[in-house]
Length: 322
Image (cartoon, rainbow, N blue to C red; front, side, top):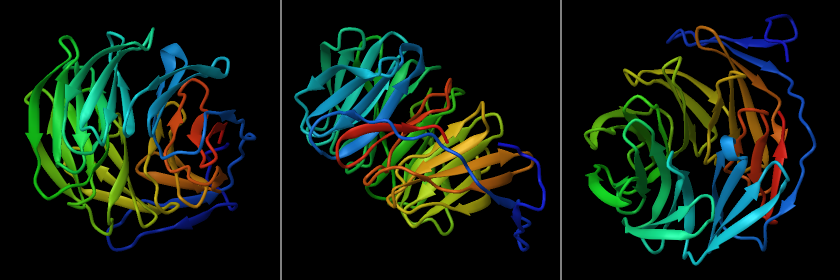
């Protein structure tokens, strides 16, 4: 899709804060392709590992492992009471949060065999691997803490206590020593120093009740946060300054940023995928929403192909190329 500005776009200017422009355009997409995963369940986070062409889908009692090159189901990791998220470390160890058990299951990403079980805390939710430290960070939603796990020893090395009540949602590492966490209870974004394992900064959000999804544009120094009400808020990752906000679908629990294509994606509760082109100087072009499936509030993207994967309430893994 062309990025040029012409008469076919509607340009909106934000006067008071001199916020950047928003351009509306059409977006084309490919037909969804479904892979049955099993009976309908509480589908949570999807994690895609490009190097192995693998998607891990956490839901209910299991993690379903899908080979996207097939595409086909490669295997299942079962025995959970509430699988929520998956992270895979550079050494091949995988980590699954089990919300009801308050633990993190460690597995071998090649064989899918269980290696260890690490204690976390109540409602262990999103989980992120931080490459510079070789650590995994598990967001304990109800406990309002973060469990820090060393991926060499597969043992907890720290617990980060956080202020403001429960509500830890999506998180992302910038690969430069910081972890950013959407904190729904505090209506803010938390910045964690991953080397010292401490809360570094809190960025307050304006007009964003219950922030859920979060993605980083590291090169531009931007944080993209989805709000339950149907808004995407954009922050400066250094100062926390709110530079823009854009309308998206409601109830989005994931935000994705494609650095190669300069695009933001947000799957929403209204069965659509919001698509936003990112231009220079905080310019944003909002495309026509792409149809997804009921219940598809989370997603993962393959940066090599640009294909976005999601799971609908019927229990099928589907994908589109926006």
